[in-house]
Image (cartoon, rainbow, N blue to C red; front, side, top):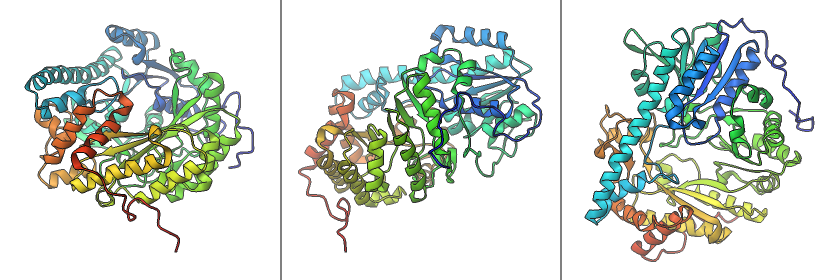
Amino acid sequence: MSTSSPLLKDHVEPLSLVPSTPPSILKRVLFVWLPVSPIFPVGIGYLVNWLHRHHPEVEISVLDLTQVPEGAVKKELARKISEFQPDLLAFSWRDVQIFAPHEGDNSLRRAFEFYYSPNPLVRARAALDGLRMVWKYKNEFNKKLRLIKEGIRLAPKARVMVGGGAFSVFADQIIKLLPEGVIGVVGEGEDAIVKIVEGKPVDDDRVIYRKNGKTIRGKKEGGVAIRSAPYDLRYLESVFEGHEFYHRTMVGIQTKRGCPYGCSFCLYTYIEGKRVYYRDPEDIVNEMRQYYDQWGIRNFWFADAQFIPGVKAIPEAMDLLKALRDSGMKISWSGYIRTSLISPEMAKLMVESGMGDLEVSVTSGSQEILDSLRMGFRLDQLVEGCRNLRDAGYKGNIILNYSLNAPGETEETLRESIRSYESICSIFGEDRVYPMVFFLAVQPHTGFEKRLMREGYLEEDYNPITLNPVTIRKLLYNPGRLGKMIARACLLAWDEEPMKIGRAVMRELASVLGKTSPPRSSSLEAPSPS
């Protein structure tokens, strides 16, 4: 579709792009954003717009429990249900796991201190703090279960749905902890919620529910037709009490769904599928324009599995970048981007359209390890994409995600990771490159999980939501002698500023491993023209 036509309408007519639909059986839908760290509920925004376009006669309301003081959450849920009297309660559950390296959460640090510190006093303190964190994790998990059950008690005649990122990952475990009749949605929920509202069966969607003591799973063929899915922010405001909380923050935008890659540790293909479905660039820019004008949003995060998921996605990405460049908006945008697919022309468009700090999953500096993890890119091409960005005048920071101690890691492959970091520093300057050290967390429904089961590292009947000292150590994959070395380097680096911890880890590892040799042309340098 041409991007030269006007990109903004004052209001999206709900029936303009939707063919005639069956009448709705349920008339009042309450979306509940279960308590989570403050982040805009992107998925609920899309579901609200989708349902309103198909059934404008349905009354919708959004309750954001993130904004409610902890002691008042249950009371606020009761108040809203009493006032709104929903026919359908749709809960969104985003977070489950802890022991991830986010700012303000010391759970990963305490775990490493307990398992790897040579100081018995530090280990004792970490054990006590770790017990508190595990209790907190279990308490927060059970709070969300109780809120869903409380909603069912307060609205006994309402249908109940549960979805969201956390539920999608742990649906098999969570659905067994909820009453029969609750319909869980794995992945995207637009088609399923419309069917529920219309009183249709949903077994041809990715749902999970329990009936007569048995767990039943639906199967969906294809994805939601999001190509033309205009967004009406004014309508969302009218049903979302407290939306001002997110004004002038960063907002997530979906430009596509699905990812064709098969990275063995990643959940995106399980949640969204391997086929990529694109949104129209005009709709995307129109959505961003509304946030820009109405909420003062200047920072956007493209909430895609990958902004450029393969060569076939390049024309779509180029069209969107051109539309952003020509929109006149002064914005900063970012997302997960494979620099291996950035050509000189695309790099120029990225800079001109306002790309901010860039997050790149390098994972390892060893091509052999990348191939074993089925990452689907070459390091030399990744580095060449970085050079293209530099040559295009890119001035942002580069965040490099490394997952050290993957299966097959050796001292030499660790040196290769250090060299890859140093190579990218030579392109942008060390002050603009921030390595972030992660570990391959074991996730359900991934090839990595299946591999560890085959190798006997994991029991096939393990429970991924049960945390104890044994399971925590297994799920934070960092085994063997190299694991101890990497963990000790992390412990020495942890008192640095959060964004500089990765640099300190790289320095410590380089010191332990000895001086690194120059990058090998086969892995880091672009091939010479023939």
